[in-house]
Length: 231
Image (cartoon, rainbow, N blue to C red; front, side, top):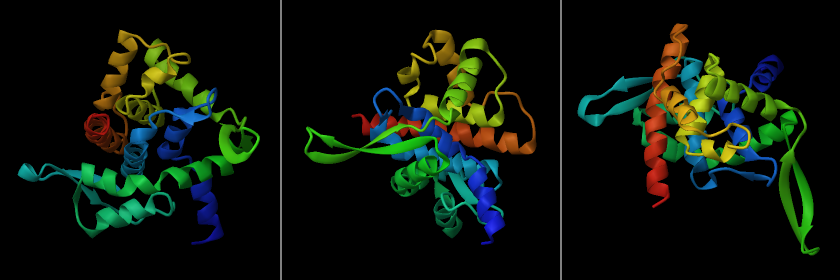
């Protein structure tokens, strides 16, 4: 991989990265929905693959919906392991999320720290035990994303593909109400979020159609995964 390609992938922000950033709660230093976070991040990565032409969906009849690898392997090291996994053979969505999700949290956090969106802060608990906490990095990225999501959900603004996918995944994760201080929660907000989950936003390019379809599929899988995890 050349230095130019590494720089390119580093400057392009993934949905997966922004997903974790939005779920980060600055007041507490925690991440919303930790118990199902691996599913959520994997859904983000699968959406990133679809958005950039590296994954497609096919109806396999009684086998359900299967994920296929497409195109060339992604250069981004966060996405490559998932692409390698589905390139071996077509796989079910839940299988892909469960296999790929557990390894994503730390490298995505590392990327957010590297970009300056989050910081790791060392401290001592009770003055004795070393601990590391997360704090906002002051880049303003999280505030910008939340503001764009609020405009879509509260003011009915037309979302970009990136914001539509991001909002749909946050909603499907079940964590949107956690953001109620920043994005007021209401029946209208919930309805608009559910519409995005179903891939219901303005059609644009062919890539947008692929992303909308992937969002609808992974949103259903996220909801099912959350039900199982919270039993």
